[in-house]
Length: 118
Image 1: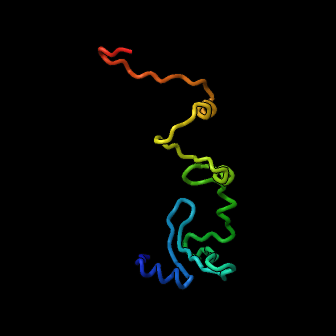
Image 2: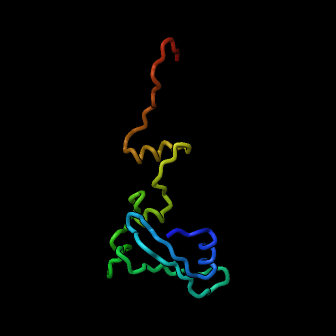
Image 3: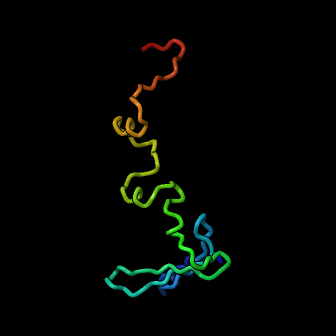
């Protein structure tokens, strides 16, 4: 099911956006339906699973899977704001590193180079 940008735009404007997912937990045909607007500029959308070969009547993916597919963190861990992703371009405080590693800080030593002096 290929959609053009114009087709997606029309579906969004109409409030009826159909798409197919092929993820680890969500597969098959879905539709986003815009519900009534309670507040101006704040539309509410309802996600509906179509009855297709991937549909499992009575299943509840949110009850069956309580963790992130990419990080394995729970919703509480995600909501706490602590990133499950390490970024090499951000400095890590020594205290935080000690707690996470459970060890005393040791100074990393660079390899000795021929003729190098301290």
